[in-house]
Amino acid sequence: MQEKCFLCHFEMPDPSRRDQMIAPPFLRVQEHYKPTYPKKDDFIVAVMDIINNPSVDKTLMPGAVKKFNLMPKIVYDQDELRLIVETLYDMDYGDSPKMRMNKLDLTLNNGEKWKLSKKSIGQINEIVANLNSFKATTISDYNKLGKDIFDEAKMIMLDESYTGELWEQIHVFFSGVEDNMHSLISAKSIDKADDELTILKAKFDQFHDYFEQEK
Image (cartoon, rainbow, N blue to C red; front, side):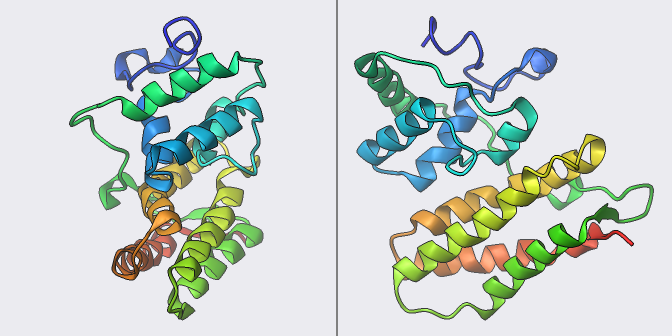
């Protein structure tokens, strides 16, 4: 990991070296992939796959892709890569702060709501409608809902037209719902899925407090 990974990735976020970051810290990679792939074997397969075949369609970290670009395809010895990913899964980061949305982190644009395209607002409205109208009795339906709304959200986060402070505010919002979407994708019980669904409804209800469609 020292030789192959930490040249680009910090092990943990370091605010004092923020300007030197060219890839997401390993802690953030673990945070995004482990909730969706809690079983070690599944985690290893998923992370090795995205490293061997980088793809926007497969990434669970659209914010990182927008900020740092997609990881380049690099040829690794597969046994060595597997050991690296196993180590990433096993690493204990203790009480390191996670990325969470706090409503106070979102700010208006000089007292006005941030303006998004008609397409993006339509995608948000579709997410909200899917959350509010969802009715199912099987866990696979909940998992599919999580994937569907994550795919819609990912399109907004990867929109190249959003830059600067506007994109930072979009990223703040979606950083706060990513964990819940991932947890819904991987939920194994109806009770857990219902909890995540309730949280997602509440969080997406806040979206239009800060963003609106451009004229």
